[in-house]
Structure formats: C-alpha cells, structure tokens
Length: 466
Image 1 (cartoon, one colour):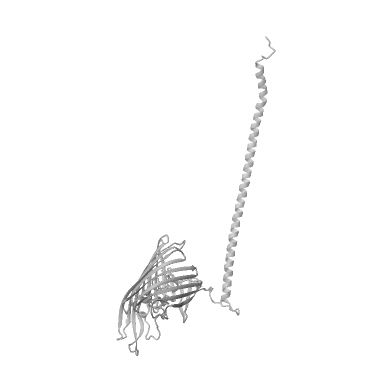
Image 2 (tube, helix red, strand yellow):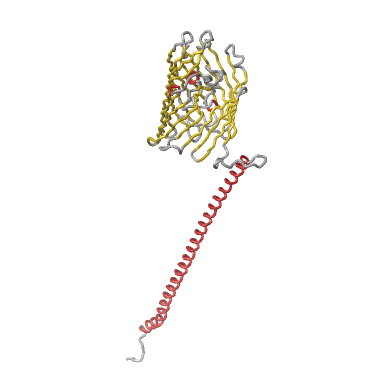
C-alpha cells in the first residue's frame, strides 16, 4: 500500500474545488455592487423627479400671476378707455365755443344717442286723377330721434318728423322704471299708443310700405295720444311671458304718412281740438288697454297673441250745419277692439325663416248728423293678414291682404299686395312693392307700385310692440 500519495481519480476533483472557491466569493461581491448601483440610481431618479415637480409648480404659479396681471391691466385699460370716450363726448356737449360749462345741475345726465332715418319713395299708379299723388318721387319724411337716460331708472325719447312742408313732434315721452313697485313701468308724455301690433310702429319699421287700410280707417294710421301708460311684463312659465298696459289719454289722435290707402298723402294730423267749448270731465278722456302673451315653442319658433282696447266715451267734436252758419258740439263715443296673432320661426343663426301675422278689428263710432244735429252710430269690421319669408338676413319676400267695411259711408274696400325687401346693410334697405286696390270710396280699382329706400344714421330704437 502507498499511504503517502493521493489517488489519481481524487486529484482532479480536489483541484476543481480549490479553483472554485475564489469564484464563489467574486459572485457575491458582484451582486452587492449591482444592488448598490440600483439603489443609487433610484435615489438620483427620485431627486430629479422632485426637482422637476418643484420647477413645474413654480412655473404654473408664475403663469397664474401673469394671467391675473394681464386681466387686471386689460380691465384698467378698458375703464380708462370708456372714461376717455365719455369725457370727450361730454366735453363736446357740456361746453359751448366760449368755454361755458352747461353740465352743472344736470344730475349726471349723459349726452343723448341720436339717430336720423330717411324714407324716400317713388310711387307709380294706374289710377286716374293722381297727378299730385303718384307717378312721382316722394320724400315721405326724415325722422330725428333722441334717446337717453336722465337718471338711473328714468329714460327719455324724442322723435321729430320733417316733411317737405312741415315739422312735427311725433313722440316725446319718458319712462320711469324704478318709480313704482312690482316692476311697473310708467310711460308719460306724447307717444304711440300701445294698441295692436301694427299701429304703434313708425312707417320705416313696417315690413311693407304703408299701414294697412283697416288700420288707417279705424285708427287713423298710428294711434297717438298725450297722457300716461302703465306697463308690466310677467314671466308665467318657462319660455312664456305675459304683458299688459293701461292708458289714460287726453284724446285719441291718428297720424299717418301713407303713400296709398284711405289716408294716402292727406293731412296726416289727428283731430283739430281748437276752440272746443265747455269743461272737460272724465268722459272726455280716452282709455286704452292691451293684454298679450309671448310663448316660445322650442328652437326659434314663437307665438304671440294679443288683444287691445280703445274707448273714448265722449269725444268732443265740433260740427257745422248744412248751411254752414251754425256750429254745434257733440260728445261722441269711439270704441275700437283689436285681436292679433303672430307666428314666427326665424333662425337665429342665418336669419332664414318666416313670419305670419293677422289682426282683426271692430270699430264702433258715433257721428253727428248735420241735418238735424242728432247722433248716428255705426259698427264696422275689418282685418289684415300678411306673411313674409326670409331667405337670409338680407333678402325677404312678402304678401298681404286687407279688407274692411267703410264706417258711416257703408260698403267695403280691399287690397292685395306683394313685395321684396333687400337689406343692403344694417343701415340701408331697399323695397319694391306692388299693391292692387279696390276702393269703395273712390269707386275705382287701380295698381300702385312703390320703390322705397330707407336709410339710417346713428343710433335708433323704438318701444316694444308685442
């Protein structure tokens, strides 16, 4: 036996074990290094993320501060601009060319908004005997409007109308909105009476050239008076409103600047009240009322329904007998009841759509009999309907029909018309209208063709009429 030597099969195994011991130590050291590197990397990532988030927060705060500064500066600039404009406007109105100050004692009233409206018409007709009425140019009139605010809650409006022959104060009234409780508005002065949908409109506001014949015959065109009106608008549901008014006037007057119809190119002023004898009592005043509702049907559709009343119990009138030698006075009743209906569907986006409207009127009037000084009572009916289709905001086409019984004289008259309106701009409008008349009073039927040019300068607004 050889006890001092390692067997040959064991020697390689021992050699491999001796060589592997250092390798196991190196592997443990590598894992530790990798773990340290990972922890260091994660710490640096967290540090970078924290610094980045802090920077973002700071930038957002700076942006908010900049926005606040820009908004504040813009608001200050806006107020400074408004103040500068007001100062320039007031400087022009508050001082004359000698530098005298006229603003003292005005209570802070601002300069009025001023508008000028011109209405120019060429009218041609197939009727006979119209040399002075048709086949010529007609300057129907120039209206100058003044509107403004005396104090908060007290507004004023003045309309002066110029024709080729005369000057007329059409309207001059104030509206107090804070004087009475319950949201009541008080209108006082001389104004177009709140009766129906068509009568209160100025001629240049009409969708056609003239007031309908029934409006001219029963109300004298525009029903106008001097006195007071009380108004109130109430919300009665979602998309629904109720409006009412009550009026107390000296007397109802008619005012018309008609190119065609019963009052065509006649003296458009109302009744002459000069030299009327006696003392005025409550029966000599006129009383008016209107009740109307507006209902939104959804989208751009709405419907309006209204009723109006005019009652003059004892309208004092001066007559002459048949011989023209003796004057006599009568207090005569006048009553007009009107019902109106409007349906409108106009797209708010492009202005396309249509409007349909109709008014039915009942007229009761007393008249003096020159033969014996007695009183005659006559009841008359009439109506007008019209529709207009708007292709867009600029162009529209319309048709209308009008029929009424002629008070006192008897018989009836009617007319039918069609028109095209071109809104050339916000301040210029051109309208071509053709209307056929069957006139019982003149005993003739004839065609009238009118070309109307209406232009506006400055600011212009009128009362609501629904």
